[in-house]
Image (cartoon, rainbow, N blue to C red; front, side):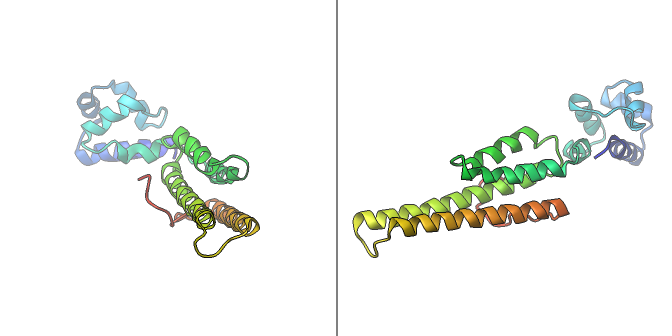
Length: 191
């Protein structure tokens, strides 16, 4: 979101508390000119300054976090599409979105939530896919039940890969359209 929205939020909270700019600057232990520049939207508070203002306004700093993040649906789509790397990099569907998530979760709006859902889904998909394959291989190895041909096992793996790819592509279109609930299925490993 823009600096203007953060400036409005700070100004509104200050007025609701009944503080003048001078009083808020004093309570927050920041320079009055700094506060004036923040409320006019000329500068954006970060780090310690934002924490001091939040503390003086008796509001959690998290209430300001979405206002300090930029919107970037292109990055959200890239992070989602990066899960397709499982076709060429083993476990790339987990580790590449994870790296992108860690890199931008505090700077780009909606990355934290979407990244957790992508990673949880991909971990779930990986466990299910390879758990099934491992179970089939053990079944054949120990001679219990049906004997599955390597061709059938390969077809099952490719089928799961194609299904995951389709889900990733559908999710990319959903992210582009601004749909919030993408990847609602998955073990809640990352919270």
